Image (cartoon, rainbow, N blue to C red):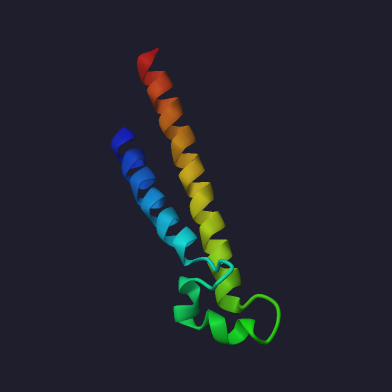
Length: 79
C-alpha cells in the first residue's frame, strides 16, 4: 500500500508541475497552443482554461489525499 501511494504521489506531483506550467500567465501560456488564445479574445475565460483549472484542482486533491494516506500509513507502521 505504501508503494502504491508513493507512485500516485510521484505521478500527481509531475502532473501538477505540467498543469501549472500550462496555465495562462500575464503574457499567455502553453494553453494557447491548444486553442485557448482564440477564445480568450472573445471575452472571459475559455473552455480550455476552465477545463485546465478543473483538472489542476482535481489533481491537487488527489495529490493532497496521497500525502495524507502516506502520513497515516507511516504513522501506523511506526506505532
